[in-house]
Image (cartoon, rainbow, N blue to C red):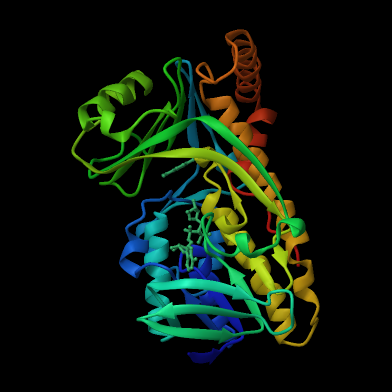
Length: 402
Ligand code: APR
Ligand code: PHB
C-alpha cells in the first residue's frame, strides 16, 4: 500500500475534474485526479458543444482558451422551427450583447488534458476500486488501485467529479441525501458526420414526426439529433434512414441544403432530469454530472458543471487563503440555486419541443398535454418578452456570488 497526500483529491478526469484541477493548480492548491478509464477513452466520448459565456470566461481564467478562441465560433442566435414556422431567437439583441460559444466538449476536454500535462500535475488514469473513506471526518481519503498497486490518498477535501455513474454520490448515505428525477418517454439518436452544417446557427425543430436538432462542431463537421422511442435501437437506423428522417423534420430549405455522408458516430441517449440534494457530505463535494443531469435540450450539461466548478473553486480559495475556513460549507446551497434554474429551463424546453404522443399514458391525457405545450411554445415564440425569457436562460444566468 502506497500512501499519498494532497490538498484536494479529485475523482474523475472529465471536464469538471480537469477544469477544477487546473484552476486549483494555478492557485498553488495541490490536487491529484483519479480517473477510472484512459485519457483516450475520455476523449472518445461524443458530447455537446454549446458554451455559455461563464464557461468561456472560466477557461480563460484557467489559461486554457487559446484553441477555443481560434477554432470556436460565437453564435448570436439560434432557430426554433415549430410546425413549419421559423423563429430566430436573437440572443445578442434580446440579452443586450450575450452570445454562446460553439466549441465541442471533446475539444474543451482535450485542451484541459494538455494544460494539465503542461504543468505536470498528477492524474492516475485507469484506476480501479476507487473508494471514498471518512468523508464526514477531518481526515478524508480516497483509496484506489493503479497498475496493480494499492494507494491511499490522504487529503483535505474530495471533489466528486465522477459523473452520474460514479462512486461519489453513492458514497453519501441514503439518509443524508434526497434524489429528484424525471425520466422522459423518448431518447435522442445522435449522428456525427464530416459534412458541412446545414445552417450557420442551430435549428431546434418541433414537428408532428418528433423533435430534431441541427448542430455543428465546425464548418466541416455536423452533429444532428432525432427524437426516437425509448425502445428504439441504434442498429435499427442505417445512415440512409437517419438522413431520410432528418430531411422530413428539418425546414424545407434546410432539408434541400442538407449534405449527407457516412456517420463517424451514431448512438441513442435517454433523457433525464436529476438532482441530488445536498451536493456535499462532510468534506466530499459533488460536482457536475455526479450531482445532476439535464436533458440536452437546453445545452446545459457542461455549463452547469462549469458553474459548480467555479463555485467550489472560489470557496476552496477562501479556505486556503485563510479568509474563511468554513467557506466550503456554503457550496451546496450556492450551487443548487443555479442548478435548479438550469434543470427547470431544460425540462421546459424538452416539454415544449418534443412530441409526447407515445408516452405511456392514455391518449386523451397526452393529447391534452400536447395542446398545452403547443400553446406555450406559440406564446413564447410570438412575442418579444417570451423570446427574451428563452434567450436569457439559453445564454446562461449569471453565476452566483460566493
Ligand atoms: N472512479 C474514477 N473515475 C470515475 C469513476 C470512478 N469510480 N466513475 C466515473 N469516473 C470518471 C468517468 O470515467 C469520467 O471520465 O469520471 C468522469 C466523469 O466525467 P463526465 O461524466 O463527463 O462528467 P463531468 O466531468 O461532470 O462533465 C459533465 O459531461 O457527460 C457530459 O453531459 C455531460 O456535458 C456534461 C459533462
Ligand atoms: C450539440 O451540438 O451536441 C448540442 C447542441 C445543443 C443542444 C444539445 C446538443 O441543446
